[in-house]
Image (cartoon, rainbow over all chains, first blue to last red; front, side, top):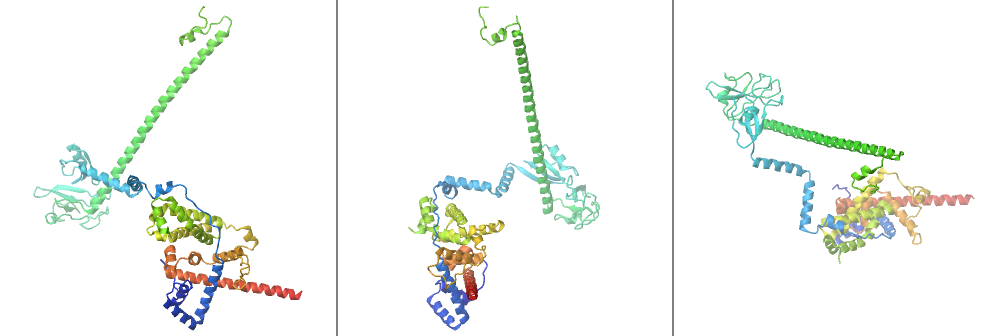
Length: 325
Length: 203
């Protein structure tokens, strides 16, 4: 609400004009009017204007409006039964934009209940159903691992198709014979240290609580590599990158499916159309042949001593034109 | 039966109750809208639309005793829409207005002093309408709701969505503007009368 200011004395003039003042307030206003000539002049002006408007009060004949159809009322605002109200509410909810997101969340929840798992492997993120038997060799992409294990699922191999955004991970044995995983600084193998940007724009970082065992500069590191402890976990940025990749893959999958569906539909319809066209052509040819044949017979029958049109009629099961002949 | 009772019945789907309610509010509503728009045909359309909106949405009215204010609120919004769209469409004047010198022409000289009961009532109404159309829409709304519809400042505040003090401010400046215009007309009338008398003496 925006307020327009007015001198309280003038505001009380308006209130008095329409009888909105208490007796005490009215007495105070009268005293003010007696003292202040300017205020008194304004009071008279307002009273004159009001008197003019009162005289000009309209007494026009208003048209009558009568509602005859109860249907809109029952349909729009007063559903007759609880079932109808519930149905109306459900329809309204289905129309809401949030419904799409809710549906997606519900689908994801159902998939998780059904056993969908997302696992982090040295080579990338693996989406699968059920337990995944990991047989990864160092440096082997997760997609290959998945293929070997025979489990249903697909892998998101890091760095395969997200240049500049992926987080390549390399593995190499350390001096104690255990496997260590390193974060490479980028595809080009830059020389930046932890926390610094490399040529690919990636900031390398040291993750995990076991930093002492593989601090930068130890013999197991490649140039500019950061050690990742064996307790591998996903950082927020990594998860975002993998999520984006997952969404891209799903979108691509849907697009591919849609394209394939369109192609199949097109192929199917084309086949049906061609078949129909062929049949129509055949029917047309057959009909033309019949017409031509009938025409020839007709022409022959008209010639003196020509043959009669008995044979076709007999074929249709009708009696000959002249049984006695 | 009170308006509030009729509203309650209407909310339960009683069409006859709503018709009764509409019949009671009809004249006041039409008078307000007619003054707001200055056009009888458009006023009928707006009134009809306002009543339909009220009919469809009456289930949402939580305070049945405020049906009148609520209905005027609906009508006011429709009037505002009408004025907004009126700016985009070409102005249409009645032949009567054009021959009288246009919509902005000073109304025929009828002042406070000369407005006698004998004068034709329709002329007086036209004068009042022309004066009202020359003040701002907000001032006109406040004055019409206060003067002709009988709403209090607080009720007008609820209808228009501004504080009650603002309503009083608008009424104050609107009435002052009307007073100034009336005196301006009175002066113009006096000047014309003087010029006419002077011309008669010369002849």
